[in-house]
Image (cartoon, rainbow, N blue to C red; front, top):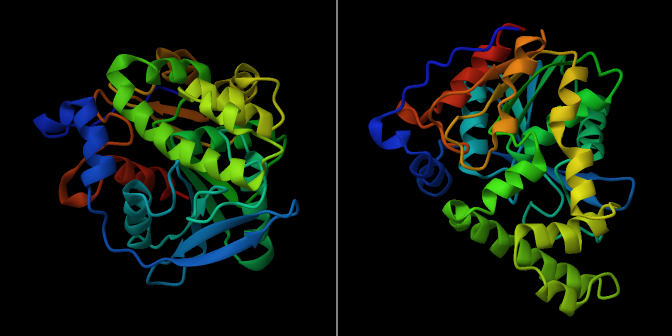
Length: 319
């Protein structure tokens, strides 16, 4: 499939990757959106909270949205795309990954970049209780990696799943971690660590036999967090095995539905491995768009409708 030529041309200020990333995450006021929450009780005794929003007209089309690291369904990028799709006759359901809905999850484990069993649980819940003929998946950053892994690791997919769009996706987790560890990205690393440390403190209090305060104190970097908690809690030998087994790049050749990947060239979270031009050129299902600008989930555009939101609708409306 030929590479997708991007038409994204933001205002001059938003040609800065850092400005577009920070503004879109911290300063953007998302469009008004009414959400209703539903809880899914999982087979392992845990739960997932999902937040629904609806089009004005009765729709048989559903977009499932998955947030990034330490995000939730109320992040501006989640509410932005949900609002825009609702206005264009799509219902949406935004998944709060385990422990991300404002309430600690029940188990020692939580979520990670490859926990596709939780997406499977959401889909099975929807198939059992609702009637949508067309479903698309839309993921951001870590959520995009999870979606691509889900699509590539399964030999067959439910026929209702038609397409997927992923935004600012770290296709190689270890390489993206290396980028985040650079001094130029220290502000983001500190933000993630602050949130993750709060959660690990809760886990220490809930499961004192699983993780000690001394282990908790060892967490100084994102790599430390994955070494001390993520790998242990989710059955991996160490962080490197976790990164290797869950990086979505290796699953792309197995995907058999149309997928649009939008990764900005000036996204400081992403390594060159996250711009797989050669793979996309020789794969009929992988549509790769790499705008020069956009930062990390920061595709600012006029009228508070972001470029990635418009492109998502363009890509899925041909169903």
